[in-house]
Image 1 (cartoon, one colour):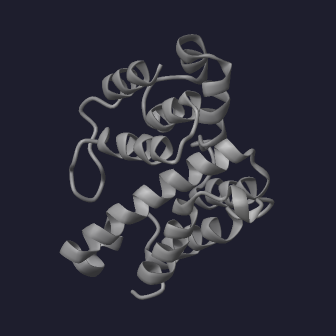
Image 2: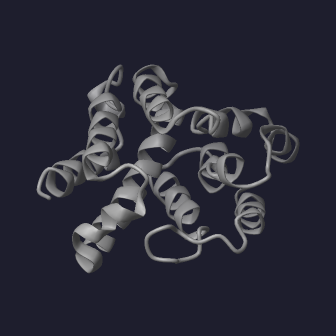
Image 3: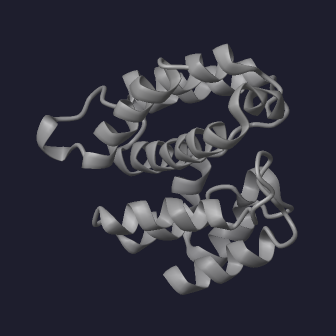
Length: 181
């Protein structure tokens, strides 16, 4: 399932690049899946890591995911998929509210996704400086608000013993990068 998900995502994202540095888009889902795999998540969660941006950013539908990978993978992907018919603020507020109550595997995917995005931003900031924020429709302050709120709300409802270490790494990066700049 994991190899099939990687191949499926690579085909779906073919020709797409990241907005800040023009690296192939598939590098992001690969990193997200690797975070989940390294933290011992089930194959369905790792597969969802590879597939998490396909519904938002390609012609792939949740029904396609369900058909190819089953209802559990589709449920996890759906839990991380934004409704692009809504405004940026509405989408981000929904994710902030949702992560507070989302099932654990969906929280895990959301945090892995945001952590990898933020690591890329921090690396790009080293090269681009403040011009990085011109790559986003919403600037530095809105990005700071969003990533900070995700970091704050990701821990809600979890026992300390079940929190993966990368949740702390993500929160630490939010504090060190976004609150530093």
